Structures are given as C-alpha cells and as structure tokens.
Image (cartoon, rainbow, N blue to C red; front, side):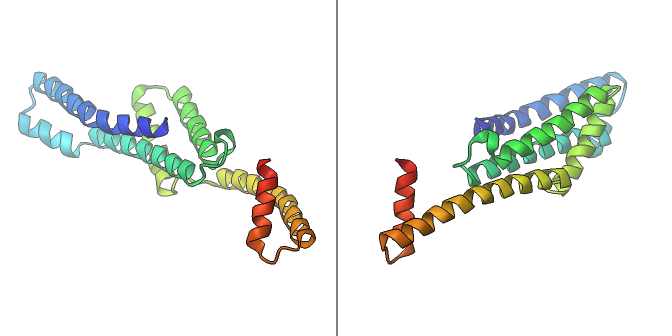
Length: 174
C-alpha cells in the first residue's frame, strides 16, 4: 500500500540520517577533522544536503502519487493518473541509474532530476499529453453515457435530471 510505504519512509528517515551522520562523523574523525568542522559539514555540506533533498523530493513524488490516487479512487490503478505518474518517473530514474558511471554521479543526477521534477510539481509535457489522451478517451465514453441519459430522460417522463441520472446509474450497476 502506498500509504504504508510513505509512513515507512518517514519513520526510517530519521534513523537513516542519524546513522549516516554517525558514519560520516566516524570517518572524518579518523582522518583527523575536528568535531566542530564535521558538524558544520553535516549541516551545510553539499553531499549531506543533496542526500537529504533527494530523499525529500522522492517522498514528495510519492505524496503526489498518493494524492492523485486518493482523488480518483474510483479509477482502476493501472488506468489512473497516479499510476501513469509513477511509471513515468520510475522509468526516468531507472534510466539514470543504468547510465550513471558511479555512485556519486547517480546521486547527483537523481538529485537534479527529482529537484527539477518537484519544481514542476512532477508534471511534464509527455505526462500532460498522456493525461489528455486518457481524458479524451474518457470523454468519448461519457458521450455515450450522456446519450443514454438523454434517452432515459426523454422516454421515462422524469421531470428532474436527478431522477434520470439515478435511473441510468441503476442500469449501469445491474
């Protein structure tokens, strides 16, 4: 479940970052750096900053997917905008992973990709195009349902749209 995944990420983050800080502290201490410098590096250093921001951007992506999913619960998962969004960004991150020549470059490229995607609210032209294609298909299907509604409304003699809609809805669930 997506919500469980998000909760687990949040719970693990504090422990992971704490352990990471301890490892960096231990390593830099063994190289002779002073604790004050190490603490400053952990608070303001580029690598530590990138790791944290990459995590938070990834979490924001999952939050966005969750919000899209819960806004449209009636949709099947594989046909939902949330699934489309997750697949799109998963493919992009997988490409980055397979093409990265080193762990540092992987971290750097993930950071840049997720930072930029987050700034765009995880939307892009290709996603918008796919969403519009899906909406067009849905609109066509709704056109058929609207014709059914009009046929029921005119043939049943119902005086309100609500009654006609309820009658059409009942016919869909039968």
